[in-house]
Image (cartoon, rainbow, N blue to C red):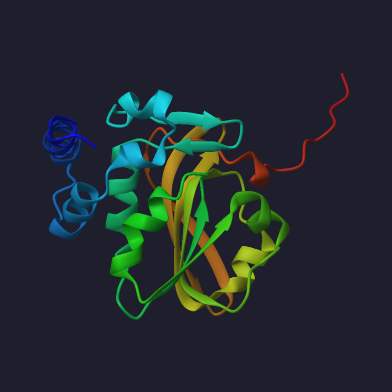
Length: 199
């Protein structure tokens, strides 16, 4: 990367922080520090790198996206990864969320949305599960992988509207609580089965 291009992307990240995150209530220093440290353009194909700092999601492929900066900022605020956390990241297809969380947590395991929905490749239990997208439902495998007292942060699709949501597993039961409406790419691997209707 040339010096001019590096300066441009650094300026773009600063503008993202000042005009998208801070103005929307994302002011926690650990969040801003991580989002300033990780270049979003590195997680996009070259032909879409110029879209890295827009205020909405960038579709990378049929099953991959880079969500808006605000989504990731809000996710980190709700998740608050700690050094003793064992984190499972359900990926949106770019690896960006795992890179944000990595230095904050003790251990990070990354899995695709398709595998998480099917319960494949999940080993052990986790104190924190973070999902890079909105789901209609959590798979049984994900719920079982969350230890008692563990927490989950994800997008939730309810009646066609996506919301940021959080939950904590208490005595074997997990309930998701919507936090706020937010534009979030939907992970269709977690869609509810379609019901037949007769007219």
